[in-house]
Image (cartoon, rainbow over all chains, first blue to last red; front, side, top):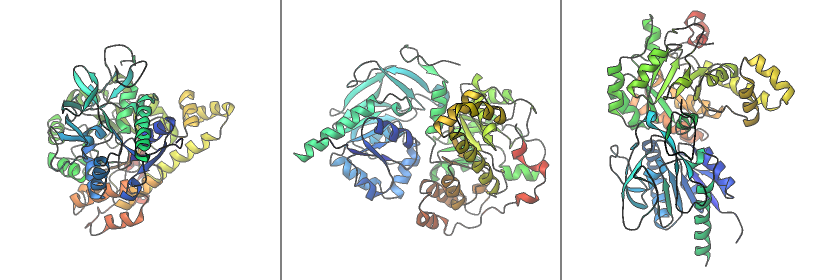
Length: 202
Length: 303
């Protein structure tokens, strides 16, 4: 099966364009997803960086939250960066009132854990499953993972804090590979989507 | 300023990528002017991606007259404590000490803004000297590129703040987009003359010509008062909108704020914009820009 997988980017708010570019560079067919019917047509989904409170509200308001939860439960591959990581956490340590998540990864995240914008930084990060040089990690008002459950695998840490996690078909990073022009993390996700499609077609 | 060194152990703060990347995260969103912690919470609950903390919204600055300055640090800190979304605040054009103060307060973005009374009639602040990123206004491409050359990590078209009239916002955004489109077709020989004409660095002019867009995020500001206004600016190419007086000078701020957020996300879906526009109560009254004297036009400030 050589046909390119179709991967959506949740386009309610955030750095959607950069993810579309990165996915296309990693040989996926990338398209924005804002509505339930658009979600139904993709093999995998990226939840971009943005404001997690805004994305969460819009997802509930426009009826995307429930179908998205259902598809993640059913095993659709998902990848979340920064705000997207928060959306994939089963639990937020310090949620705003009414802030909902999609869930999918048994982890507790702390929002803005690395600080405000003045503390935002770049640092090299070794990510398991990404061969070669460390990834350039761009951390912007970034969350970290306080703790993970037994089913979740820690892929990277920075300064003693968990910043990349995978559980089955769900992948999350505190940082933004989409801002760097290095598409290896997106390639890892595209491989996850391909593998899932192959498994489903058997 | 720190430089990027991906393989060193020490994390680098305040890099261009971290500053510009912050604005990328705001795309598709609405940034709202607020003057109290309570308003900030209303904005956050409505789905704002950030708030602009200031003492008076532009409509009141217009009404009151006098010199408009940076807000009281207590007021800015009160808003920082009230919400978890990013908080921006305004410094006067060229008033780099106000900017230093705002950076020390820990605001997430500084708006070197024509809405406040300029402190320097020749120079804007050197924005490379700061860890905190800056957003600046522009009425045309040359102005946008001069601000980027000075270190701005985000641009907003100026419009005419505090009027509730979208006409200048449209004019400035169209101007910037048209000038970018024109550059697209230029060959190398023409780019040198274009840089001279735009009064902007050649390297930036060349970069815009290649990218077909600014190298930083472009929002629209100054006159957005309704969901349809916000959607209009998005359809014209703004990557998000600032709403100043339009929300808290209206009859039902919470409802209008949520409606403008919806219309900004679904800017190309008239049915959703129609639904968002229903029963919002009174919009801010608004000022006709063609009757506004030249001396009262904020967009003329900055050079």
